[in-house]
Image (cartoon, rainbow, N blue to C red; front, side):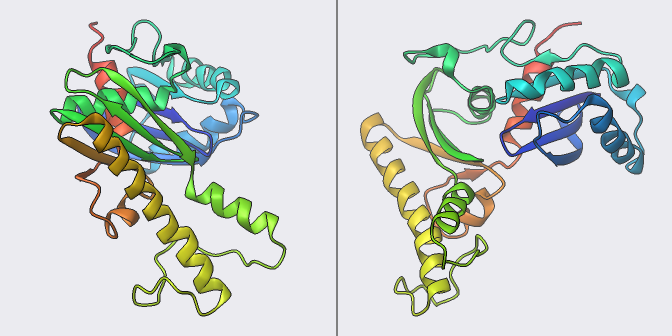
Length: 259
């Protein structure tokens, strides 16, 4: 079995994979100070709860956008699973795609993994929208070349900044406004829900419309990340929602390595 680890700015996701089947996934807040032993106390219990043991893990692969967290993840892999962790983008799991941007080394591992997974799943030109700490829009052409994209503040980050900067604004949940589709708020909370939720939808729709125009060919839009399902129910811009796209990309990279 493969243990795939996706280290994001907000959460670390661990997934146990057998072939292409995801047997379990677990999430913990990202903290670069978290030690390998702390990870192990938490993760090994979760594996046991679902009937698995560390001995069943034969490969470990890691994608990270938090360099400071990598060392302890590598120690976790060696100490508790007895395997050197493969680091996505490095041998033997290099990016098997052309990266056609000005600074290829600056491309985040999560965006590269998403691009590889999306190209493997869908034909033609693609835009991948990933809802994370940032919301990213990535363009992959029909032959699998990564062409560039957009980085926008994530909706939770935007809301946090708004609440922290305005003393009288309350903290609200990320959810559709409950006002029958009106975009004119009659109280402070409704006004915030409209601004945050429909404002974010309008931003995504506008950016993707501009991207479609610039690409000039039919484009398939794939959404991933925790909030993808929520927004998919309130806009028509997404053709597919694949919540496990990053994990699938890591599995694909590991699958390409021959024993």
